[in-house]
Image (cartoon, rainbow, N blue to C red; front, side):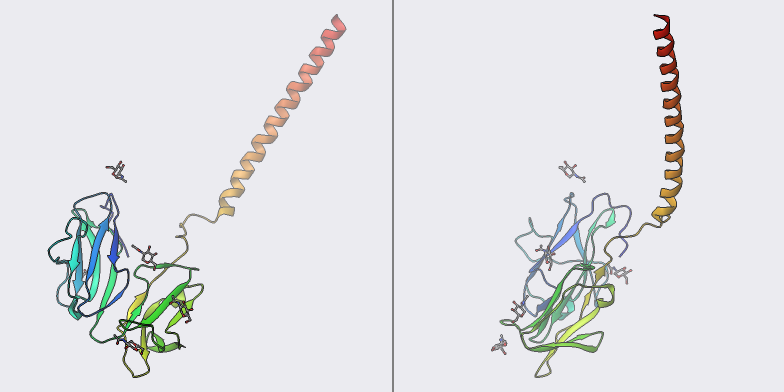
Length: 227
Ligand SMILES: *[C@@H]1O[C@H](CO)[C@@H](O)[C@H](O)[C@H]1NC(C)=O
Ligand SMILES: *[C@@H]1O[C@H](CO)[C@@H](O)[C@H](O)[C@H]1NC(C)=O
Ligand SMILES: *[C@@H]1O[C@H](CO)[C@@H](O)[C@H](O)[C@H]1NC(C)=O
Ligand SMILES: *[C@@H]1O[C@H](CO)[C@@H](O)[C@H](O)[C@H]1NC(C)=O
Ligand SMILES: *[C@@H]1O[C@H](CO)[C@@H](O)[C@H](O)[C@H]1NC(C)=O
């Protein structure tokens, strides 16, 4: 996910309700939070790329895009854009034409953090099998599974299937590495020469002090002698 370098202020895309999957006819609002008033919410769907997110009347002041009735063709990737370009992470939204959705994080999750996936209909969590990249990964009678410490290998496309065979759309779980390692040399390579220089300077200073001290001592001895 490379953001354009032209963005001087990065935005955060807030989605309300805060989830990755929706039922048909539900409504959803998108808001860009950042220092500019010039944000637009853009989207790529199966029908259009780089389309401005439509918004229904009302709530324009707070929300940059409000969709009152979601349909499966609203499924796609959404992001914030200013004149400078794309200035937020993009989020993926899936609209189910059926009665089952998978609740999963919208934004990438940090490595090591817990993640809970919930399989549910409009009213309750449902006993389900959870699939990752098309393969059964776990089953849960309470309708939710938790990965306690998520790792890069947990990244993938998740969905759930309930006992009568109905399934949710798939959503991508993204995992972000704990910290971006800089391509700088490993610390030891930097620390060693620096230490070497410090030690050398330190010894020189100590030597200097010792000399001064010695001179001073001799001087005072001489003066004592003189008085
Ligand atoms: C955001 O806007 C506020 C108020 O206009 C300003 O004080 C602040 O410096 C701005 N921050 C950035 C990162 O542009
Ligand atoms: C949207 O689609 C266009 C054309 O396929 C692609 O170049 C662009 O990267 C997509 N944007 C996002 C945020 O996925
Ligand atoms: C949405 O949920 C994620 C975790 O599930 C959380 O980190 C994020 O702060 C939430 N955003 C809002 C606007 O509530
Ligand atoms: C959701 O599932 C529960 C448990 O199976 C069921 O009782 C309820 O009627 C379902 N709700 C809807 C809206 O389908
Ligand atoms: C997952 O299911 C367990 C067992 O029913 C329940 O205690 C827990 O609150 C559920 N977690 C979520 C996030 O729904």
